[in-house]
Image (cartoon, rainbow, N blue to C red; front, side, top):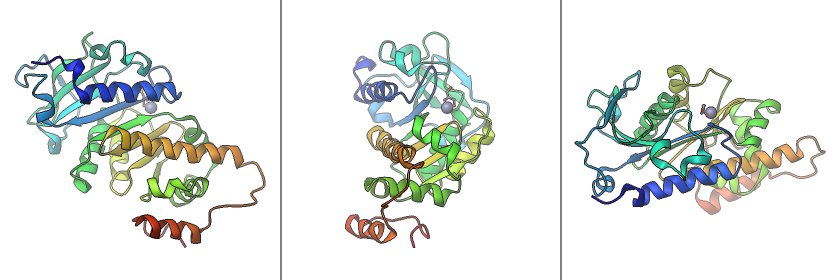
Length: 270
Ligand code: 2HA
Ligand code: ZN
């Protein structure tokens, strides 16, 4: 068996979390990330029959039974992940019944997965239904997106259109738009179900006055989605209180649609 700390998927995961912390998105224990790991990627590093602990997840996700997940630990700080991946992260397989995490590696101080596991697993199931290559769910607290939910309407079409108008790249990176949930109690199966429902037609879901969820095929793509939306929100927060003398028009957004062959969210452009 090779040392799992040398596994490219783990190195990529740790680097991504470290970078998210560096950007100020993940204060204290804020944020959580989960990644579906394909079995062939993990076999050189772990014996899948050697289960360290069985941890009930408190709900059932039968669609994901038998899948492997690398998931941040509850109460853990992104800041610390690079110094002790085994204490701050865990890798488990979801049992046949879909209601138990079979821990294969990590949570080495007796900990367990993030309190937001319902939103993560339900979002994975929702995204896999529309994209079999989907692998990542990322939750974080970027300051400008959060700020925007206090001063902008939470109407999804309006919220999406504002972000598209803030930087030319926005519509290119997330033509499917941004869905928005009102403030809800976090860490519950209700917010998990609501998030997953919003993931059916977009890869970004804002949790008002809390943060954002992003989904994608790999860590770079998912990080880049959130990074681009956060840049749009940053520009909005810089200009919202100033007279607006220019904007990106719908005509120009249509030009981008044609140039990049985008599948822009139906009905969002005039
Ligand atoms: O504690 O971000 O949503 C981590 C969180 C909860
Ligand atoms: Zn959060």
